[in-house]
Length: 424
View 1 (spheres, rainbow, N blue to C red):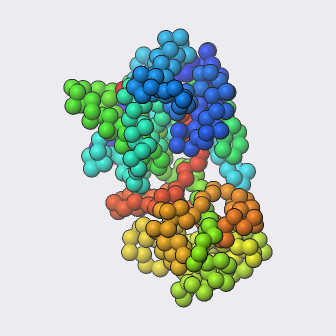
View 2 (cartoon, one colour; view 1 turned 90 degrees about the vertical axis):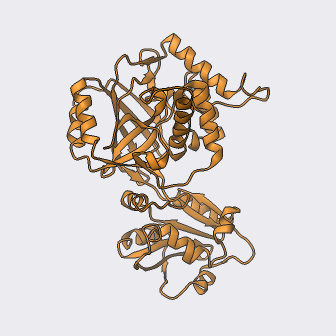
View 3 (cartoon, helix red, strand yellow; view 1 turned 120 degrees about the vertical axis):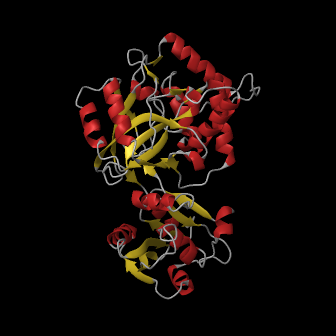
């Protein structure tokens, strides 16, 4: 059974702040410039807790960004900038955003908790490997603040009753709301609090038979599991707050759930393909190269044939083209991914194998326009614009116990930090 439980969440008091000014993106997508901008946006912006700046005179353990985070959190609770709800609740979120093509979308989700356990004991299924550094940073923050500040983004399958429950919950006026400047355009966030015990039970029952998959936030979940193990060893019981991870759960079939591709740029280097013709000569039979008027046309052509072919739009200083081959029988869900086929069958012959990628042989961008500019400026010899992976592909890889390559999925938009915090 999948156990999803409510929490006594900590959230910003809208009588004290404008919600849009105090939210922030997750720490792992915030640049140094954006961190500075968020600091200046509002003295109470959650970035000061979740991803604080380092100072030249920091003293680890006594005066550093983790101790300052704890100080901000405690002060804001004391001053009423943040409030903790008196009863357990599920928190329903509606996230309005703009797609790269200008289309308007809405994604619904629910903030809740699941037990923070090692993967083999977890109700959440992963699709990525994680790195040590970010986990150490997040664990230091949890130890200092005793709070999970940023939710793990996960999706559910096989919970048909959730649609009606969510629709009923948002039929009433939202408790909180605000607007932010998103990655592509303005975004709107609305929040409802569900506290009625019968409704809480209905939500929990609806998710009891669901399968849960991490979309984004593997580091955050593994950190929560490490913290839970530490606190259990120190004497915390199985139902203590420390034993749970904060999650934002969405429907895997929600039309508002969007994934963006991460495109590849091949840096100039000895022995790498330097033109479309050179690339073409290196590929195995079965690949077809079809000239396109421009990169946008090649991207559209790749999208149009994705159900029948592995396809990627390629840009060089000579022009643009569609590179594709028919879909075949893959050895596993991972091997069927466009990004894996691109790496093994195109990039490796082009001179960038897995070792070269680890050593920085590729640059990455989520913008087709930027890919076009970089190749035009000859800062890259070739650019490869991919189709986005799908949620179904991610789930298939996770169900098979496999992991996707780095930079295979980019769930958009990111779940904001600051709507709901979880005390530990």
